[in-house]
Length: 214
Image (tube, rainbow, N blue to C red; front, side, top):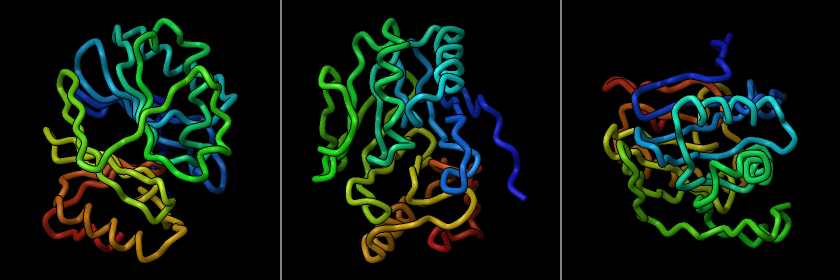
């Protein structure tokens, strides 16, 4: 049985996980979202589903307690449980998103996303790097689960935020098996010490454990 994921977890000095509070058969205990960095301006990876007040309340509480503004919001891919909460964050946390940029890899399916016109989404580039105090993140294209999927390499910790390319529990579903296998190989080549998945518990990768098994 999978270990229970708390609503808010301080994983390290520069990583805070906030559960999306959207449990289901597809999302497991919910979507994992992560605040990255150690300074005032930080990065949020993914933003859960729309219309989940509990998630917005937890996010607000963490941002207020830590004195954080959001410099960037990174979207791992365009599924509702990863991007749906974007409009709610901008509506209910206006003081925390005044100078926030939103980033996503483009997809032909983006026209079907329910994103308000006033929220501008910038396009990721492969290998692009973003730096905030306490964290440098490099963008890693990882299609397979979806055509627009990206993972995030935290250089200081050699850690990977894998979105739905690798799950902490259960089996990842993919649109394109060839792309998925290639993406797993690209992540494995980094030899990450830990993987922070979009759903499920953290994966600690020991020297005896090969990430390609996922």
